Length: 54
Image 1 (cartoon, rainbow, N blue to C red):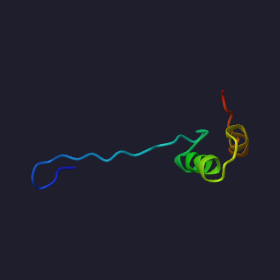
Image 2: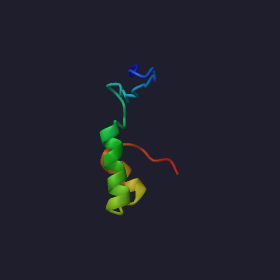
Image 3: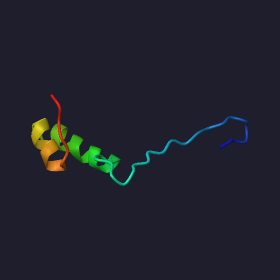
Image 4: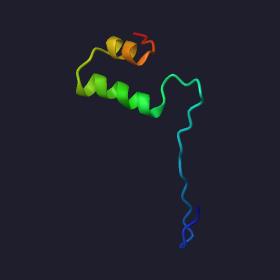
């Protein structure tokens, strides 16, 4: 996109494929379980149905 003063800007999109384990929404949910609710990482990963490597 080019603005009227000649400055070019870009928009960045996150595109997840159909088999992606963690979509942006799922990553946010995982982070909230761990940070906001204090869940252990392994338990939160299990809840979201992904594996966690130590």
